Image 1 (cartoon, rainbow, N blue to C red):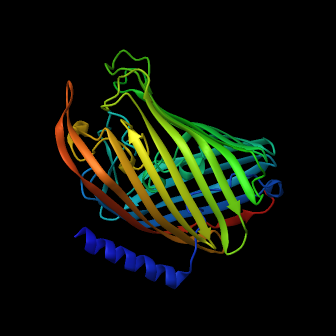
Image 2 (cartoon, rainbow, N blue to C red):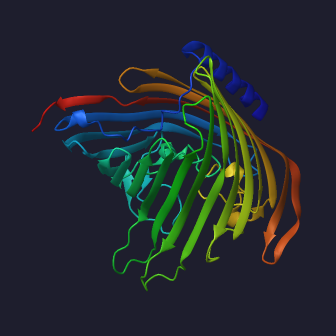
Image 3 (cartoon, rainbow, N blue to C red):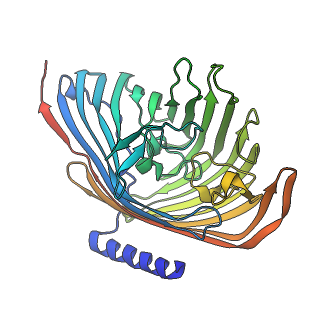
Amino acid sequence: MLKLTLKYYITLFLLAWISIGILAQETLYTDDYRINPENNGSLFLSIDNISFFRNVETDGDIFDGYTLPGFRFTPRVILHPASMLKLEAGLSLLKFWGAEKYPCYAYRDISEWKAGNYQYGFHLLPFFRARIQPIKQINIVLGNIYGGSNHEIIEPLYNPELNLTADPESGVQFLYQSKVAKVDIWANWENFIFKNDTHQEVMIFGGSAALNITPENSIFHISLPAQFIGIHHGGELKETQEKLTTMYNATAGLKFQFNTNRLLRNISFQSMGISYRCIDNHSKFPFSDGWALYTNFTAQLWRTKIKAGWWRSREFINLFGNPVFQNTSLTLPEFDRVFPKIDVFNLGFSYEQPFENGIYLGSDLDFYHNPKLKGYDLATTGYSSPSKISKSFNCSFGVYLRINPSIILKKKLF
């Protein structure tokens, strides 16, 4: 069945490629956070919608396959009260076709606490963002921050699919960009606690940076990327018996990029070392620390992006990454099956068709192959005998349409 499905996806991918052109830019999920001083005193309406159909096929060893049909709609009013200040207010609505009821809790499944109430029709949240740019290189954001792929974290540590399914990130963010470096540091508050609450507060913290050894637009560009992302379950309430837990992933490496600005626009090679750590050893995961090596190659042919990567990890947990890159199985309860060491080979294609007024049509196709997957059933004293020694193969396919025009309501409000 998987082979038939794979042929079907390849056919769809090639037909889409021929019909709408060869494209890829990675702007479906990202936003321009710079403030234009010319908009001082202006009022805008942003109609931000991304519609998606995404399907994931697996063999069930690491996680089960699924389909995501739906859309996210984030309309908001944007005010520029000063040349360095921008305010945005609106709503975030998430809809999965076929679903009529949505639990009222953070959509990342990182907290044990689950709310008892439900929303009907949509998963609905308020949206508010305040951003100030005191100098050209620095932006400070409060409220709903620039999250998801805006953080530029590698796929094994942050699954791009969360751009579609996770709640908008909210908290505080510091952004810095110059010719020398690019820095993004943030805290995303997932669970707030009141007095006498019985669940923990939950905070996601992270950072990404790239130090440019050579100029970014030079023919041969060298940079030093570094990233981290973590979770803290805490709070000082006596009503909960849950223990404090802090876990994180961190990575650093070296990136080479050759820019041509021709049909073959650029070729890049990146190699990174990655770690997983549970500081207080109170995690529900079977491992308290682990490591991984990640090497990937990308080529941008006109507007098409082709990527190939190799991953090796030992006793590794990725907190928000694609589950194919971690050493536990999600198909059994409480992580009862583990894979002490894994290898993953990844091949992917992506493209976008940009239109005018902030409209993008895109698609992606990814393959993940584990040449040898040796699993163990987890016991309280360690690992028991191997439960499976075989190959594993997963693939995914998605089509996306983002419509994000900015409409001027009032050119000079004051």
